[in-house]
Amino acid sequence: MKNKELLTICYQFFNRFITAEEFIEMLSNMNKDSLSKQEREEIDHLLNEIKTISSNIQNEEDEYVIKRKESIKKFIDILETIPRNKENEEFLNKKLKDLKDNYHCPMDSYERWHTITECIEKNDYYNACFHQLSKYELLEFIAQYIHVPYPPQLTQEEFESLVQVGIEQDKREWLWRLAFNYEKSNINFDSIVDYFIEKKDGYYLAELICAIGECLDIDAMIDKINDKELIEDLKGRKSVLDVYVSEEQFQKLFDKCNK
Image (tube, rainbow, N blue to C red; front, side, top):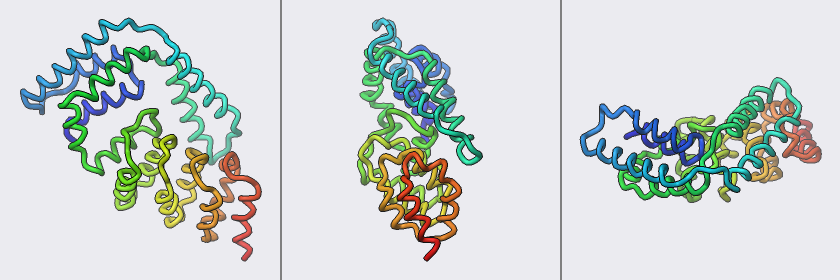
């Protein structure tokens, strides 16, 4: 992946994992040994632009930051009410820790964050590096995080092309993360659902439902599941899934074992 470090640092800033100050420090300390003179100059130019923006825009906690923290707190409260068991404890605890870390980390004001983000997105060198990613590299890049608020914009066709790469390489963890990153983007996830059902993978099918259950047609999914081993697997995960799967839907699924 060409200039993976630059892309990753920018992605962390886009998704507010780091502040402008941290962004500048990380970009300043990038390993540029393998880069050409022109590439180093391009990065230095971008760095100087960001320094100028950061110094000219006063950073204050604005309405955007307040609302974002309220949204994170809402998810924290929901996760804390879900009963733990051996199937869901590790996932829920990790997600809860990530949310709490996100809640307490410093945040840039919307104006500063938006202005710097816009500057990066208009930078020719950054765009050249990003568009040189292969489909496999782009899938890996997106899947490096379980979930971000601002993943790269994808059409349904582009999304399906990444799913196909994940299927060819049997990257089930990446496919689950890919879906989770696009839960709010009107993307259809049937191809991932179908693959997990084909592989009789109850673990990742359950993870998918827990992550994006509101985006899935649960009834249509149940109609597709006929393997008794998979049904028994999902039966053991009922306590994890009952937020998105009703008792009636569970019964419809479990009744298939009696036929």
